[in-house]
Image 1 (cartoon, rainbow, N blue to C red):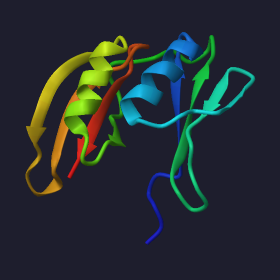
Image 2: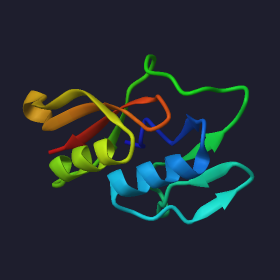
Image 3: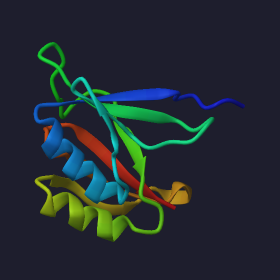
Image 4: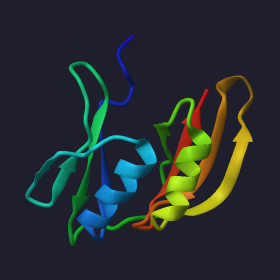
Length: 117
């Protein structure tokens, strides 16, 4: 079965601050930046997305919840989120057979979930 998610856009207020936040929390370097867009690293056939700055779209703490993979390093990702301007709204907790998650407001005001098996 093909992935249900094929791409995601995360609106931000300050692109450089958001790049620092996501690079630190997800433990990878965001290199591809152009025209107020920073593309998350990805390979062929992988789900990908970007951070983007726009006057039309603003960060939100409600609406769809995007789960980001921090498998095996959830505690480190939570610590990095707090260190880089994020707020933990639900600490690490079990989601049964699906692993563990923490809900975070990122440095820009978006609600995200950090997920690990």
